[in-house]
Image 1: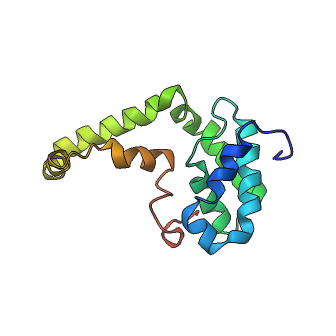
Image 2: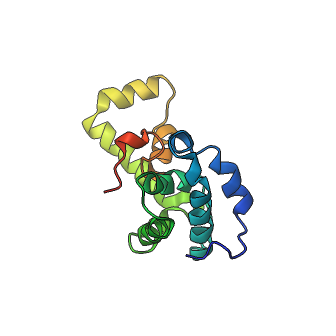
Length: 148
């Protein structure tokens, strides 16, 4: 993990640190760890760099007493071996595909809900995009998200 290397996304990462919801309330002392993990990850995966929301994913690992290095390697594994990095490029085309698939699923299996959303002008992408980009880590309290 090399967080000392110059990072083109450091300003974006720094601005997101304060927005890392429950993480800042639970373990503010680990904010520097979060910064190091995100800088190292953005340097290691240049095709993505930094995307808002990655802070929420990394915060889950750090909040569960995982070391900086372990959090970095887990994130890198998710990006490279599980191809999460592919979801973050090309204007989030894969995230858009997942959102579309969710909407079709809801039309087939949850028609009352999708109709209600439509009647109220709510598109599935309003909530699902954030779910997919943050791997659901943003919308749940840290006590409900397990890093096991």
